[in-house]
Length: 226
Image (tube, rainbow, N blue to C red; front, side, top):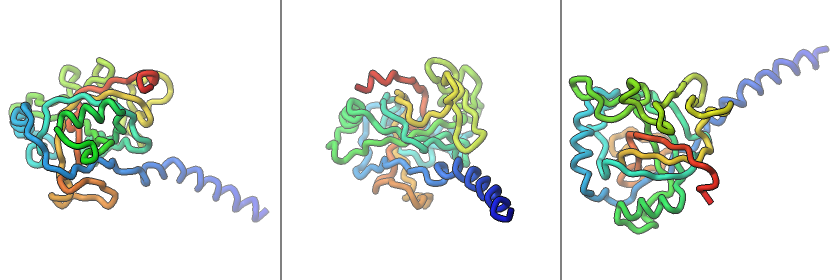
């Protein structure tokens, strides 16, 4: 009887810990940039917009180095990379497909060996100016100012260890492993330079290459990956 009594509680502990393990051990995006960010035709415009976004939890204009106002990249969301950050940003890592790697290389005018094959993505909750007007779309903004998912205002639930994307049809509401296309502003976030590095961060000497903030997400058919 003692053996049976011990078996029950142990089984419950294992079942409780299993769902939380991936969130604790998630891989940080390998999006480090080793060369200086180039000046593009829209870099100045993006810099001005970032500086206007003063009412964000973490004012973006204070740290993000602008590259391009808008770029569209496609790839696969890395497993266990989707996360709700402390500042309510929803982040994930996108493994770029080959065409998008070439597009990024052309945009930055760089050698392919100098560029990451993964990009860190950030969906901000909101980005307002001092008057309360939206500078960039956010996932918590009103419908007309919200990030779009497949052409509709995005709907995210942050309950549980992994954010759920309620725009997805079917029972699986997680973005992990999905093949998607993302449009957003291309920036460099110099995490280490600001003393905010994390142990598992893979930012390069210049920082992490990011789409921050994300403006639209489109779910792609797996056949488009072939």
